[in-house]
Length: 527
Image (tube, rainbow, N blue to C red; front, side, top):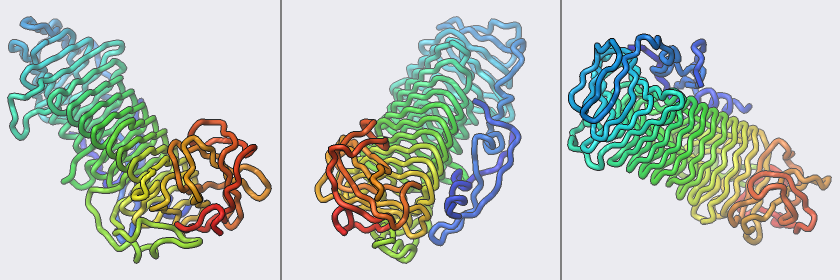
C-alpha cells in the first residue's frame, strides 16, 4: 500500500502568505509545512495542491496507462455473461454476479438489467476496470461494489456511454453494507474521457469509504441523498461533473482522523444542484482551478477552512453562501481578539461572537456569491489577498454580505459586497488595502448601477447589483486611503450584473465617503 503524508489544511500556504500581509498531476514536487496563527490557535499545516497530489493521495498517473494485451475482456448479458479473452484468471461469473478477485485490467461491455460487479481482491492489489459501453442495474442493492483492494480504478473508455442504477430499497441494511450506486471500500479513482451516468435511487450516487480522486471523464450523478462522497479526501483534477442531490452535492466527510476530510478542486468543471450543502469538507475545502457552480443549495461551500486560490466559483444558496464552520474549534472572544465593532478607520466584525479556528482565504480566482443568508461567513477570521470577490445579498437585515466573527483582513484583490445594512462587516485594522463603505439613505433596486468616482471625476468602479441593496463595501488597489469619493446611482453600465465599467451620465449624486473610514452608521451623505 502506498504511503502518503496527511494534511490538516489545504489552505496553509494561502493563509501564511495572507497573514503576513502581503488532467494529470506532476510527480516531482515539494511541500512545505507552515504554521498559522488564528485567534490564539496555532495549527501546523501542510499544503495539498494539484502538483503534490501524488504524494498526498493514492493517485498515481502511471496507473492510467497499461498493456492492452493483458486486458481481460468481459461481456455482460443477462444470464449469459462471460470472459471473452484468453485469460480468465481473477474472474468468477455466477449468474448475473461478476466477481473480480485479482489485480489486473478488466474491460467490461454489455448490460445487466439486474446484476452486480463485485471487486473482492487482496488489499495490496490495484484493480483497473474499463467501462466500454456498460449499463448496469440492480433491483436489491448496488450494481457496482468494491469490497476490497488497495485501489480501484474505473476508467471510462473514450467515446463510451455508461450507466449505473441502483435499487430504490437495499436488501442489506448492515452497518458496512453498500449504500451507493458506485460504492467502494477502497481508494477509488475515476478517469478516462468517456461518460458515466450514476442514478442513486436509494441513497448516494458515488461513494468511497477511503480516498476518492476524479481525474477525468464526463460524469452525471442524480442521487436521493449525497451525490459524490469521499471519506479521507475528495479530489477533482479534471473532467466535467453534473451533480443533482437531495442531500449534499460533493463532499469529504472523515470527522475522526486527523488531517483527513479535505476536498480539492484543481481543474475541470463542477455544477451542483443540492438539497443541502453544495460542496462540503470536514477539514479544508480548496478551489485552485477549474469552474465550480453551485446553482442550488442551502449552504454553498462549507468547511472548517475554505481557500480560493484560483478558478471560477459561483454560489447560490438559500442560507450562507461560503461558510467556514463545523470541524473542531478553539474559540476566543471576538471583542478581545480584535477590539469590537469597527469605527472610523477600524473594521466591523460579527457582533461580538466567539472566534474559532475557522478561516476563509481568497488569494486568486473569482468568487461570486448569491445568498439569502450571509454571503462570505467565517466563524473565525477571513483574509482576501487577491482575486475577485462579489457578494449579491442578502436583503434581510439579520444577515450580512460579509459576516466574520474575528477580523476580515484585506491586503489585495477586489471586493464588492452588497446587501442589507443591519449587519455590515468591513475590513479590519490589519488590512493594508483601503476601501469604502456605502450605506444608502434609501434602498437601491436590483439592476441599478452604483458608481464610485474619485476627486478628478474618473469612475473608479461600477457595480450592478442583482438584488435590492442598502449597503456596499468595496475595496481594490484603485482606492486610495483617506481620499474622498463621490457615489452615484443610475447612469449606465457595460454589464447587467457584477463589477463592470460604466458612465455617470444621467446618474444621481448620493454624496461622498472617505476611503478607510468604516462604520455601520456612515455612508454617502452621512459625513
